[in-house]
Image 1 (cartoon, rainbow, N blue to C red):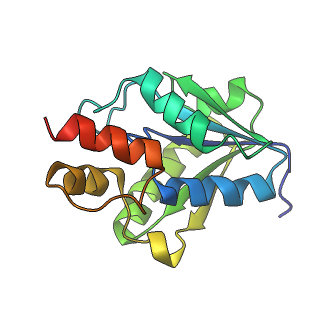
Image 2: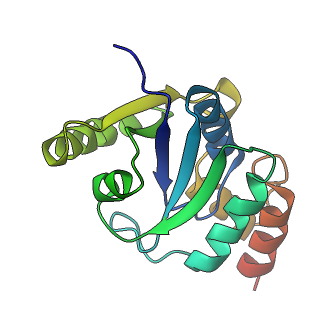
Length: 165
């Protein structure tokens, strides 16, 4: 199978973006000519987001500023519909653990039913990020834990401001 090096989508809630997300996005940027970080407006599988879509997009845009072939866009549709609308041939996601695999396997099957022309590509988490999740970072921040090496600086500052109230 050859990879179409045109456009890929990296979807997620990014509430907030972590260094693990950035690792996957950066690696995807090496595989594709253009990568669109698709920030879901209202996630279905998660409760209400901590940060509004505008702030999550701003965090992402600032974090990817050095990646010339990466941009960020909000979306409120099925990820397959969003991918199709931007001309993407792939959906790129990171995998950390078996639990991620089980969920992503199900999503892959559902997405392929919607559009078999759009491939799903999974990148294994780099070892230093294999434990990292947005919810874990939020929990650490809530109780004053150190998060400065887990998320971009402005995200760490904003999280601590928001969660220590």
